[in-house]
Length: 324
Image (cartoon, rainbow, N blue to C red):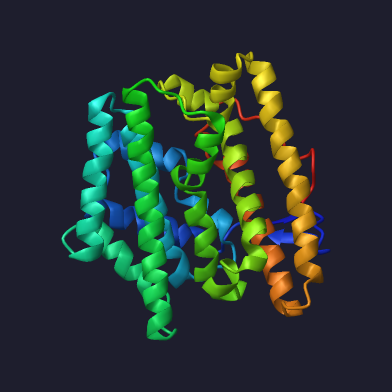
């Protein structure tokens, strides 16, 4: 079992950082993708393997069982592939790509005609098969909305690129939770039974600010890791790049400003975690579960980006500046 020693405010020093089902899931997801001809060509398949795309979910959800991890991993692979394919289009072709993807998604989840989306939606819904019907329906609705928002954010970004209209940083940050996929990653914490975090808890008023802060930390960390990749593809949807465009900063200044913003968010995150621990309305067991699940998600994102994927060039190291 792969673990890491890392002190946290919950006094847990050892984290499991790779799901023990990773190799099984990696094999099964690749087999599934090949059977459905999900990879457009051999190059796409090789890139997926070299970038360890299937390892992402095993880093984020180290406590998930096989039934939980497999369908989540399938979805994440589809989203990664969609994002990469969009980068190969330009102008109106990129807009059309995302609009066609939205159409396929709507058909798959509503009418069962989009085979890939339909299968993923069905399998993710079955994770909740032991819950009551209203919980299953709510989980399905939330899942559909989150993926729909991700695809619509792709349309928004492609329309901005077509019009050569870089959004203002604040406008970009409002959309970032959808376009980054971080919202989906956080949502799936509720699908891991051992996390003991239900939908009502995750989306409760008590966790609203904590959830929002966690989301922004993931997004800005990703922006610091990926600005070179986006710049090379002709994209400007990255806070580092938008600070340069709108505030006339050089690269070093822009990176420093994003790191400063990220460090403030991390301090806020730690403060909000402490508030959760002191909240008398949340049972002690659930407090520990919330803190450990959120911390584990952050840690998994960081390890995958820095050590596994090679997807991003010139990753900026920020993890040692503020410990979780």
